[in-house]
Structures are given as C-alpha cells and as structure tokens.
Length: 263
Image (cartoon, rainbow, N blue to C red; front, top):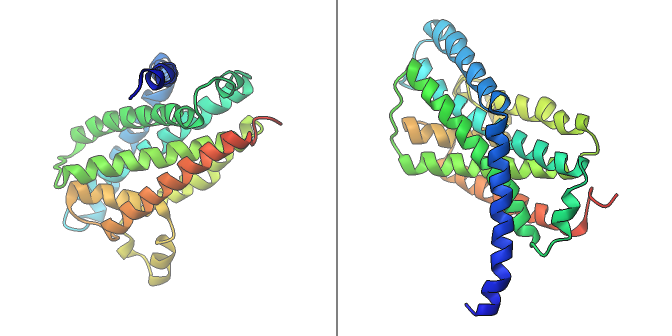
C-alpha cells in the first residue's frame, strides 16, 4: 500500500475507532440501564419459566426445559440489545444534530455504518455474556459446536444492529424508534422458538413459524449448544448472511442519499 493511501486511511480509522470507543463508553457509563435490566429480566425468565413452569413441562428434545430455553434466552437478549443500542444511539445523533459532523467528514459511509454496528455488537455480546453467566447459575450449559455458537451470535447481532440503524434513519421521533421493537421485534422473538420447539405446534402454525427469521437464528444458536434444531442450520446461516449483506448495503445507500437526514 502506498504512503498516500496510508495517509488517507489513517484519519478514517481514527474516526472509526472513535465511534466504537464512544459507543463502548456510553454502554458502560449507563450500565444500570444497559446491563442490569436484561440481567434481572433473564433471572425472572429462568425462575418463572425454567424452574416453576419447567417442572410441569418436563424434558424437551431430550434436554431439561431449563437447558432448552437457556440458549433461546441468551439469543433473545443479544438480539434486543444489539437493536436497541444502535437505534437509540444513531437516532440520538440525529436528534442532537451532530450526525452531520460525521456525514460531512471525509470518513466513508461504510465506516460510519460499521462503527455504529460495532457498538450494537458490543452491547449485544456484553449482555449475552451476563445472561450466560446467569444461566450457568440455574443449569449446566455444554457447547457441542463452538464455531456455530460464535458464528450464530455474531451474525444475529450484526443483523439486528444494522436493522436498528435502518429504523433510526427513518424515524422522525422517539415514538417511531420504539414502535418496531414493541410491536414487531418482541412478538417475533417470543414466537421464534425461544421457549418451545415448533414441533409442538399444529402444522399450519409450523409453516407460519418458518416465515419468522428469528426462528432460524435461535435454532442455529441452540444447535451450537445442544445439537438440536427446528430448522436446517445451513439455511439459517444463508438467511443470516443474506440479511447482513442486504442491510449493510441498505444502510450505506441510505446514508449516501441522505434519507431521513436531510429533511
């Protein structure tokens, strides 16, 4: 690489690192809002669903109910927090009118997108680690396919971090950044096989479930832990990779066009 190219790349990398550092500091500065609530919620899920209700449900797919829902609960927190971090952070930058500073800088749009995306991944993985530690207090987790676990959680986090950015770009007020998580993301998550295997559902409900992208993410993640899945794991990764490419390209294009930013 020539000296000229390196001199042009260095400031962009500094900007990229600054976005990531700012996002990390933001997460840790308000840890009482970013890390504690998911930990409390996960604990309640394990106590109520895993322990009290799980005793009546019995085994599921050859594992105790607590073991079965643990990967689903971890993935659910990763998804919601990856999404929530980016949608709130990027919309906050829009609302505060300082996103323009990034857009007029020499920093390319793909690095801006990657910077916010990394912030979402950081929060998702941090919260996922906290919930994993809580899960270990309730049940034993053994990893059958470590590579699949890591790949599934990273791809899922990337998908929803980028989806959160798309939501933030189009949102015009704070109500619009809470609409999708409340009325779309949460129902899809609960119906995505977090608490049950879809084989328990009637045939028509199973077909409907296969239209839910979160089912494929949860199933792939659970397969990495337990070796059981409701869907084809290869198809799950194809869907996740396709979603990453489509959403990343969309975010870059939206920034380039100034959609929701120049109005």
